Length: 260
Image (tube, rainbow, N blue to C red; front, top):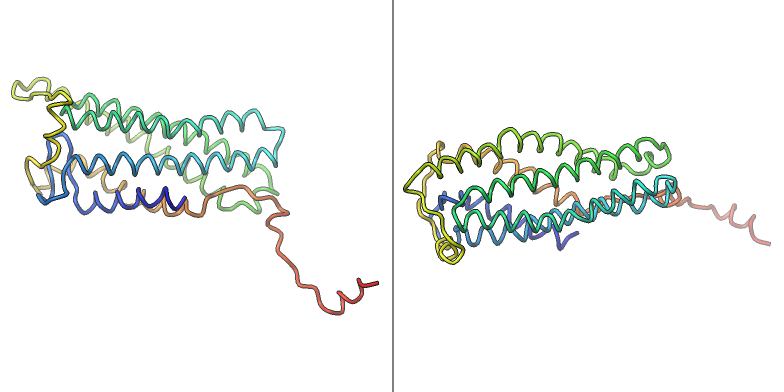
């Protein structure tokens, strides 16, 4: 988990200090290193590592519950397979998220946002199922506070994230796409044309009007989200009552009584 957390933490730190809006090549600071090329590379690696953390944590909880609740094996196998697909779907999202800035076409960003919405729908639904299993068994619940908290928080994240994406984020990119399509001055790039163009900023503007729409996802992303990656260093997993049973010290008198 440590090796997966570091790229995401680094990416969030880098993008919070040097923020930018990719398609218009808008940078907050016009300095070396603040460009779409570096930003997308950091996002591709960091976001995939973060999703891999979530996937591994869910799979680990599924494995532990399979041993403790063998009667739920079918549902847990399905949940584990669902969690297993998340990193692969994330790669698709990153490819779409890179295609948008390279071509300057917001249609790719719409597809990326839909893909992320689907990912969190799956992750949140899986977390809810696992939470109900943990919370419904007093023996498991008593010794698995971390796994219970993790699954509940992931479910709660989905409850907030998915409606936000459907109500605000996806419509934002749809509006931008239609606006660009109606503007005769907007020219889309091919991949060959766009790759050299993403290596530098086109403008640096610090006015709130230019950043307000994207700040709605940047602030929670570069703030609270990075702490979830650090939290997962603890690797939420299922332990049994026997695993959690504390060791007890035996006095010398009691030990002598056991000797022949």
